[in-house]
Image (cartoon, rainbow, N blue to C red):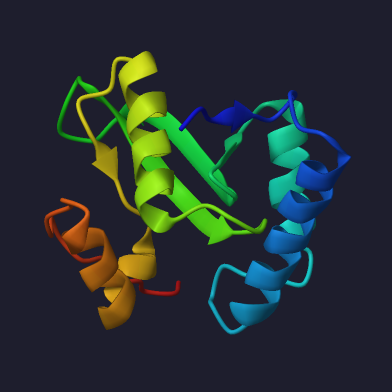
Length: 140
């Protein structure tokens, strides 16, 4: 599955990506980091090249490439993965992430925090992901 990076999207993909951000923001409005402006902030960062984004098998992926705090090796940090266009499967989306990671010399893929939900965690585990840790948040 060939990933399509931002900058190569057609009008349908661009609209679907923005709508996916809006839907995600609405669903997450009670999250401490989310504000009504969050989707626009993310969109502006994608457009400016501060965040990477791609379409993979109908899935809209927001990600970054870089090392973890304890490693010098790069990984693909999945920040958001949302089914935004008809067609495609989660397995194809994972394969597309694998392609992006390999092209960028990454040693692996770190999933986003959605895997804290049981159903989503099992979906990732069936595709070969293993539990690494969990994150907690303290508001200051």
